[in-house]
Amino acid sequence: MGIKNNRRVQTGRKESFVREEISQPSHPGAWFWAAIVIGILIRLHLILFTQGTYDVDIWKQHAIGVRDLGLTGYYHTNSEMNHPPFIGVAISLLPQVTKATGIPFETLLRMPFALLDAGTLLLLLNLLRNKRHRLAAAAFYWLNPLTMILSSYHGNTDSAVAFFLLLCLWLLSKEKLVLAAAAIGLSLWVKLPGIIAIPAFVFFLQGWRKRLLFLAVIGLVGVSTYLPAIIKDAPIVYKNVFGYRGQIIQTTAGIPVWGCSVFIVPFFNGLSPQWQEKLADPITFFLKQSWFISIVLIVLLSWLRRSQKTVEGLGITIAAVYTILYGFSSYWSFQYFAWSIPFWFFTSPVFLLGATLLAGGYIYSLYWFLCGNPWLLGKWDFVGHPYWPPIVIIFRNLSILFFFLSACTFLAVAVYEQIAQLFKGLKYVTHTNS
Image: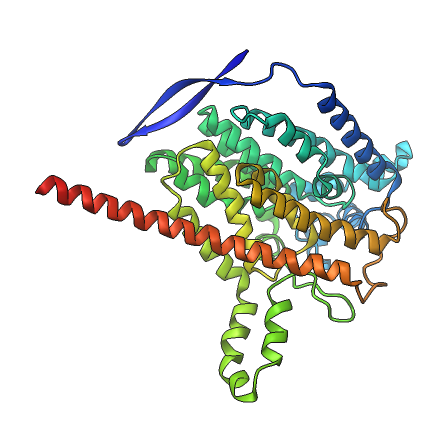
């Protein structure tokens, strides 16, 4: 039994849709439902029986601070409160719910994002409907250690970013432009990193009227929950929320958790004094400005891939966008992987498997080490483990190298395709004139 799918075909400046029949299994098999149940049970274990990372305690502190001091008052007292007003106020209600129900704060904090992860699964199933192995891909996503750990264990809001970005992509596939833009705007109520993907969406759209409408709706929806705080104290909102650029995190022994510095610093230290003097300034500039360099490359890649007008092509662009951030920026934290995992399924199997095995191996092996057991029970003790075992270091180094080389590959391919299109156009013009 086949299902019908609309495929967008661009003809000049206009767009048309071709109806195509796609052979798919009508119903998931028992193995699929078994995978779903296993994923649910693991998530319930993580939500109900584990403590989570330091982020859970940080959010508890934020919740109490916002409750007692008010949002802008707490922004002033704690510069680490870099979350948008809506989510800050929403989570400030959780201590009261805990007191009334007896449900632990860490359970209340993580449950909604595990549910959003289930929504991400449904969206991914729909967007991959023209793929023969979409059920296997969905099961692979649902049982991915990264998705389970970052949505149901870690204790932060980052899984919402992937959900809203994927929701935007799905709505665009249904030609619901305003609702798609509203989805991005809603994501800004919870976390800001969805902004990084906006250039990819903008260049995907045809015509400046659509692009301006898309940006306007994002702005209106996004800013709506910021207005009370902005009216009350705009400078502190800008400083804490919009001015936040991430952190360079390392252990108390100086082991960095991420970034090209793990390769660059040993290389630099092995150079002669003369070469160190020559390279000190450019290397320092690259490491300090890695976030800005990443953003420039992200906008460039989004522009280079502007001719990719299929939903799958846009999904690859978004995966590439976050790959550049992971590959080039040293301002990073563990949960940032959650922003892009669903979009890995639009890329090649090599990238999907490489990213999953390496990043998943890094996060799971590290969290296992920090907790002291494979079920992530007990205290997640980052400060108490200044030195990491070789297996964690190997996974970290391979992950960094993988995302850096993948980012370079995405950029190189995009440049090559752009040049190829340019020469093809010049050849056509020359042939027509002759």
